[in-house]
Length: 118
Image (tube, rainbow, N blue to C red; front, side, top):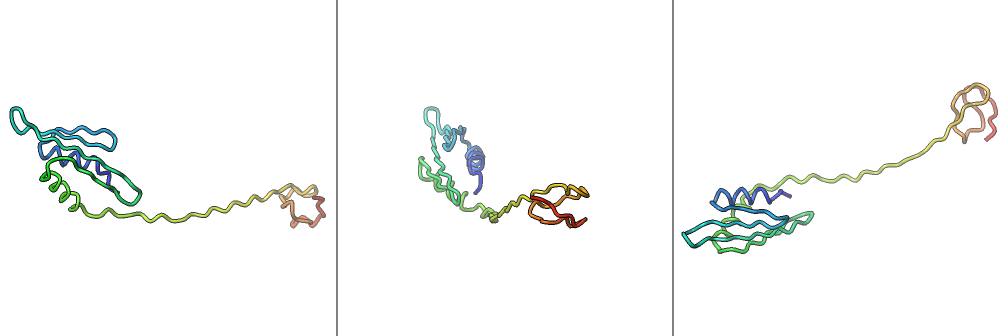
């Protein structure tokens, strides 16, 4: 998924809002008059496959934000490949006669043919 917090923050700042971000909440304030201001609060709920954006403000700014978010191109998804790791431990010991490393499961040394006691 996109990291929507910086995208939404930048979009609000471009529309004249002073923005503060706290975790999954974005607050914006835009002065509209001497004693008036427009406030917007946006909550983001992030899930593995999607994100929910909840906007609490006048309808027009929410509609504009929704149109902006819908205009973003879909982000490419990386397919997760299942990785199977198989471990196998092979214990070896030196042949007492020639010193060649021999698996402990072997009866005879593959190099000199000596019988190995396990």
